[in-house]
Length: 178
Image 1 (spheres, rainbow, N blue to C red):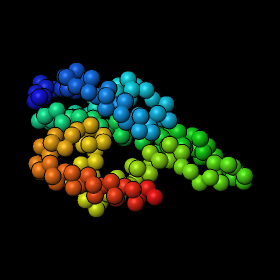
Image 2 (image 1 turned 45 degrees about the vertical axis):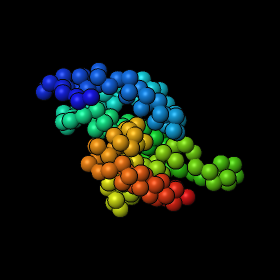
Image 3 (image 1 turned 120 degrees about the vertical axis):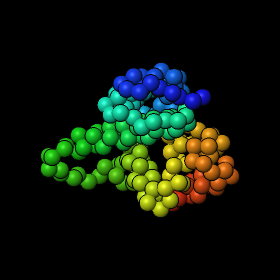
Image 4 (image 1 turned 30 degrees about the vertical axis):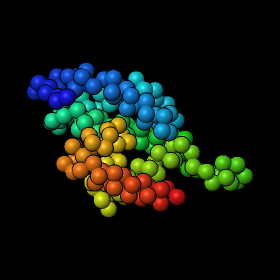
């Protein structure tokens, strides 16, 4: 479905109106994947995305998959920013820290959901330096909610290339998050 918003301030409104249901599904999927700990619900994440996109003129989106991929990236950035903000507040901001021993969570060595979100974000940044197309595949699939054929169309490659990049990306992320 091509998206042809009118030029000007109404472009973001038109794009959001045309894809609102899909954006809610995308936000629900992002929050289900560990983002719930950032104190957002589906509607709040979609609305925060709208606000962020409406502050600056969005790039031109020739089709639905590219807009959803971009919106997925915006959602990811909102979640990561909120996690960083909460961690800074939790750690006292500029207050000098005093570490106490005996904390069960520290002894277990298990990352919190917020730490996991940041680790995934950092792994994707590293992947971007290694293979930008592979990172695009992850973003379009995970953050954009697109299938292999839609990703292939958006990137101008075959669906076989997309599947191969996805498998390599999964291995890369598994290693990076270990």
